[in-house]
Every structure is written in structure tokens, then in C-alpha cells.
Length: 217
Image (cartoon, rainbow, N blue to C red; front, side, top):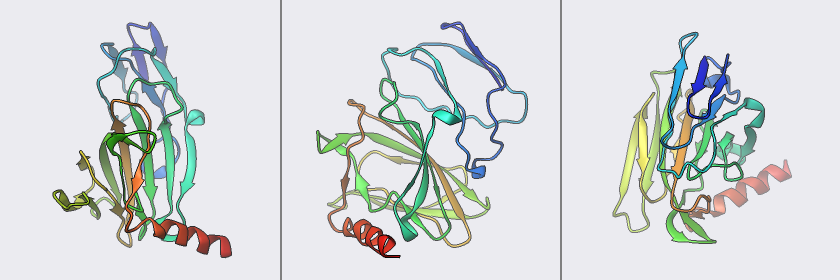
């Protein structure tokens, strides 16, 4: 894939290596400021995710290579998952935060349930969020719940391959059924570009319990 970013007079050629997200290798990405223009020339079949939010045009266009994507394992036991930090808080951007998450079959992620729907810094930041899901094999499904403490929002969804879930507020855990791997692309944005969340008080004990069990093994 060739990518030309016209206003900044940048051009990146032969960008991209991953042909399937379930290769689990970090992706190539391009950061493009607001009100800019770009063209993409596909050299092979390609699937492109465009993640956008209102911005200020503060930072110039740039290529984010796989080597610049932080890879980490979060959680333990059956709440473990692999995370690719594509555009984390430490990287330059106006509002966007972008990560992708791989959850093994039978595991949970975005767990313990957590939320970031209040502007209460330094304890919690207000961030809207989207989940774009893929499932391997494709005919499977994953489960996602989005809910608030008072249950005024309380939705449990069976999500198919290549479907998106909007998280305007509340907790939002994900479960991968046995036999099916889960992938999702997380895009978050809010008035302050920082990820501060609060775990569900009912369920936050689970993480410490799992980590303690892992340390004992």
C-alpha cells in the first residue's frame, strides 16, 4: 500500500505487512491531522480502519511503524489478553487513543468491568469508545455487555464478525466463547486525552485474585 499525505507533502511507500489481524503482529498506521487530505493506493487486497475524532490539527502527519507499537500482556489466567498500543496516551495526538486487543478463546477482556464516563480527574476521565470486532473463525460470535451502575443502560449483545459496538458510558466487558478468538479495535476520544478508569467495585477483586494465583504458580 502506498500512502500520500498531500498537505504535509509526505509519502510513504510499501506500507503494511499484515494480511490478517489474527497474525497478531503490530500494524502500520498513519496519523493524519484534521482538515487534511490523503490518498491511498492499494497494491494488494487491503482492509483499512479509519479512526477519527474532532481535533485541532496540532500535530503533523506521521507514519507509525510496527516497531513503535507497544505490545503487552494484560491480566492473568482467563482474563489475560494481548494488547497493541497503536496510539497510546504517551504518543502525540489531539484526542484519539487507539489500541487493538486479542482475547484467546474462553477468556474475558476489558475485565474487570471498568468505565471512563465521568470528568473526574485524576481518578477518571470522560472518554467515548467504540469496539470494532473480528472473530476467528468468522462464523463465531463474542459477547459484550454495556451497563451502568444503576442499570439505566444494560445491554448484552451477541456480536458477529466485523460488527461494531458503541460505548457512550458505563462498563463494557467482552467474552470470547470456547473455540473462537476475539479481536477488537478500540478507539477512544474525549475532552482530555488521558485514560483514567474506575473498575466495578463489585468485580475489581477478580484481577488481584487472578494475579495472586499467577504469582504462586
